[in-house]
Image (cartoon, rainbow, N blue to C red; front, side):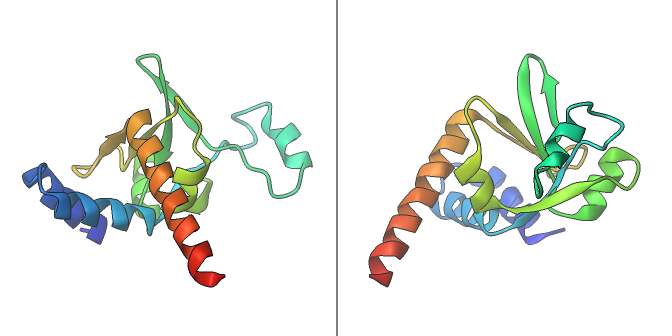
Length: 142
């Protein structure tokens, strides 16, 4: 069980407790996630993306008419979900929040008891939190 799992269990047991919410989301923003990417043979547009150095195509799956970015907090969970060694990029939670575009959803740790969906409003809120932290950090550094 990861620290994020423990915080999620605590959050589920105490949904109305702001301290539990703060702990979970703080851990989320400071965790580095394994984001599966398209493999060359899966996505014909990947070849075009590879022409620009450093560009990757994250795996986004459609479920019930909504697009989900898949996220895993361990490489083992990613590989278990993929049923093989999956290609991935490592991305900090705060970067995911800062760069996610509406109406994207997130699916965290799918196929585990610690799975959690994130809806666009929740992601937008996390984006605001990251922007506020960046403004505060910039103000302190000046």
